[in-house]
Length: 247
Ligand SMILES: [Zn+2]
Image 1: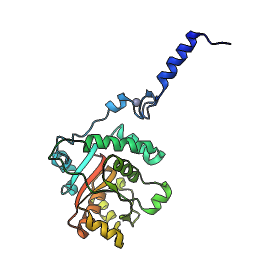
Image 2: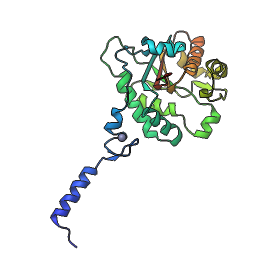
Image 3: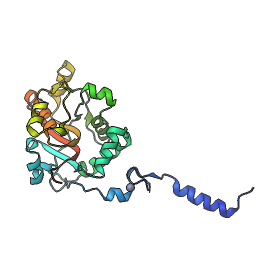
Image 4: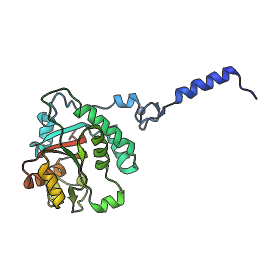
């Protein structure tokens, strides 16, 4: 049967309208990106511009993360819906597109600025390592995926083998602050091969990248370890989200 011009037009109209459309990862409505405009509008962003590129200048964050007070801190949003959902999908359902999107949002909200007082970009991004047992089970590290995507948006080189997690720590969420510090003691090691030492000595400024900062204990343990060995390196702490108490 020959299709009528009317049917053809209607078909073409729908076909063109559907081009580039997909289901929003969060609400499953049709969307032109991974997340629709409505869900994007639900996100509450941290105002990194207001705090001139360091959320530690915000008393609320200073109180919540005193162990990171010495470092520049940047995060895109509080750990809550829908960012929490996107991070869980990345971590447990291997949604790698989420890493690229979250890195893009981090870039827009935390790094893109005209403000001359903003901290300069670091020489390298170092994702927080997973213990090899957990890596073997998960087959990827979500912080590496985010750092990889972020390095494509900046000139910061990603470095994946300078930090090593040598102790399989218990999940931090089940522990008190004192237990977390104990849990993380000697959990990390710096790569001190001749090639790595050359890099450490050359760095002026690095960013540690995690998906979520909860108490800051992990980030702080790594940052102090780096500063013990290389006190000349300036350290920035970056995360997609911060889990604030009573947020
Ligand atoms: Zn949506």
